[in-house]
Image (cartoon, rainbow, N blue to C red; front, side, top):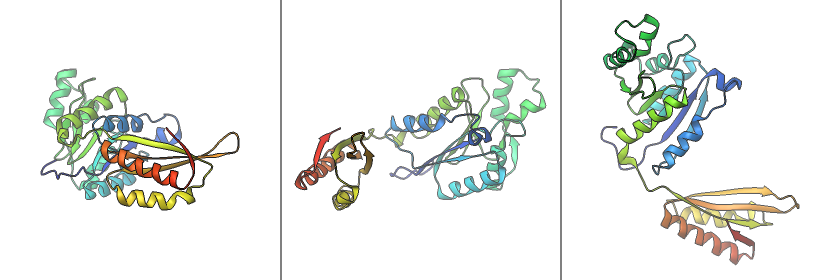
Amino acid sequence: MSGRPDRVPTIGVVVVGDEILSGKRVDKHLPHAIEALGRRGLALDWASYAGDDRARLAALFRDSFARGDLVFSFGGIGATPDDRTRQAVAEALGVPLERHPEACAALEARFGADINPNRAKMAEFPAGARIIPNPFNGVAAFSLRDHHFVPGFPQMAWPMMEWVLDTQYADLRREPPVERAIAVYDVGESQLVPLMEENVARFPAVRLFSLPAFLPDGGRRIELGVRGPRTDADAALDHLVAGVRLAGHRYEPM
């Protein structure tokens, strides 16, 4: 990411595959991406599920490239006719697919110099791509700008995502955020809105959340809390506690 600003870019995840949308496979990439980013003090801003539809994928990536997002895309980069991610990326950027010399070399190192034409397609990436090494079987994936396209197999994709984060975005690491919350009982969210609005305005470095639930005995509970840098989160929670206590609501730490 050349000339990266001090702020953390918008981070997105795309999970590709008709098998996800049909229910034949259950996605595991999104939870892993959230966890991998969280260990580095980063957070996901958006996520999309998409089938293997070239036009729809091209539109999705055209928008995310235009925004300058940091994106990890899982799936659809194989060499079979139902894999269309690499073609969609090329269409989104208006560039051709071409054989990548480093990807070809990785294939030859893994399978020998006599690579069959179908396997050789695994080394065809949109022009200008950089390779992402594959520690599992040597078949490279690829990056373009701040978009990174990895296979749908977790045993390949997850180490590749972590490699990208640690080699290309190490300077984005932050102290992992903390979460602080209280449980507030027998109160409606609407009664707490003024307190929440004041909290959001006073502590912009944290994210406030309010999660209502109905209890088995018929009562109500709101998990009211914040997530962010430790010092800011502690101060924001103190503010929420003070407001809840002043209003006379029953609460307890979580």
